[in-house]
Amino acid sequence: MAQRETLWAGDIALTSRTAEACHFFRAWLAEPLRVAAVAPSGRALSALMLSEISPAAGPIIELGPGTGAFTRALVAKGVAQEKLALIEYGADFVAKLSVDFPHAKTLRMDATRLRNVALFDGAPAGVVISGLPLLSMTVRQIFAIMDGAFAHLHGDGVFYQFTYGLRCSVPRPVLDRLGLKATFVGHTFANLPPASVYRICRRRSRHPHRFVEGTEA
Image (cartoon, rainbow, N blue to C red):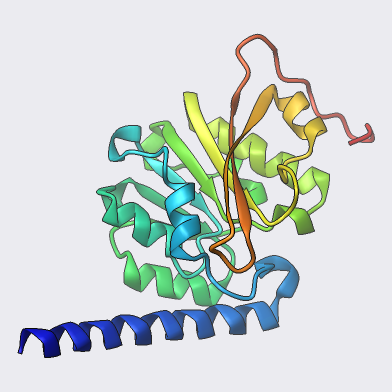
């Protein structure tokens, strides 16, 4: 009987993952540049992305959660849903996230407008994790996202970004203008496609530069 229940549980989990993959693929077909990947992030990437995050880190902002792969991993790690702000543009994804994580703060919005929204009753966040497809965005869009994210983070707050590219997907001019530094966390081949994770935080010895319209980036 116990073996049968285990098999049923496995079937349910497989069905859930298959449905999630189909949901994600349909979203990619509709908006390939915005979604950027054909499948949700796998367990290996989730583990790498969250490897340095603890439930005590404080409120967490997730940008581009999609079907909630990282969100589920955060909750499984002990992060309370009430400590999560999920920023997602896709309407179908927002509807799914609102059902799956009813106690999280889920907002349908463009992440470039992050600076203009109030989160956690004004309390600073400790961590931002991003699944946004920065490689398909302009430098100005990336600047707005990073500027908004760090406006919500406390002084020691950390931003985690994964990329399918060969280097950090936040361009060096953006890092320099905001006084940030990027550090390689790790790489996983056990994801479709393989991905790398970077940790981005404030530089202590430098002041951010103002981003002036018309300057080179």
